[in-house]
Length: 281
Image 1 (cartoon, rainbow, N blue to C red):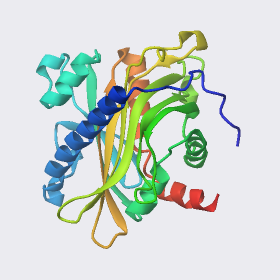
Image 2: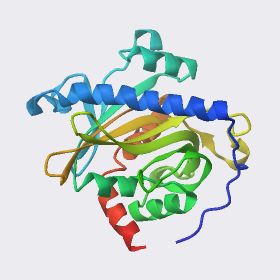
Image 3: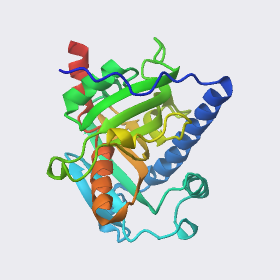
Image 4: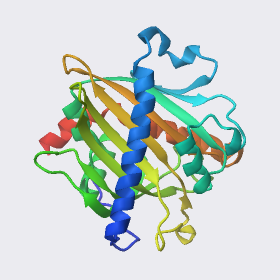
């Protein structure tokens, strides 16, 4: 297993105010996604099949997880069906024609096994996970950690990461690798009714001095998605709900971005295997 190259960016030192801002951003995004999940979770099982709704079109499936894209998304943010907080955030960040994606399904296993496979608080664990799940990550680093795992909260992470994803094999030579700088937040919360909920948030951020790297033949991408994992009764099946956006960049790049985003949305499908392998290391 080859080690990644040293990060092209220097370590990031955040001010107390910046840490608080990222904490506020992350908790707000997780809270918004939980609200969408709660609305979906209240539906009868028969009405959760998005492929039977005209609004959605299936994009990709892995085992019991399927990603759907919103059909014919609006061409301007002023007419989107996004909730107001999402609307303002994407507009403020100058997203170009964002496309809404939703992933739903389930994973066999315990919530703890899944979250152990999901959390990657340092470069070494990022590399290990990439190797186990055979992802397209080719480089990456943790630029700053705001909160890390503790004995009482082993799946906790909040920080800023950078990584590079290679293009699909069929498009190598035509499409440059894409890099991203984003805030990541993971953890488990226990709700008042006793439900245990795991989450993973990835959301692009702009930081001075950590901008695009065209001189390294990298195209700066954007990411915004949050995955909710709900432990079901019995503890051996976890419901999964993912919601996020992909930015359109013309016909070819739209297809590439959609493929990359849908693959990312499905990245948790083998997290149980990843967790088991990590325990053996």
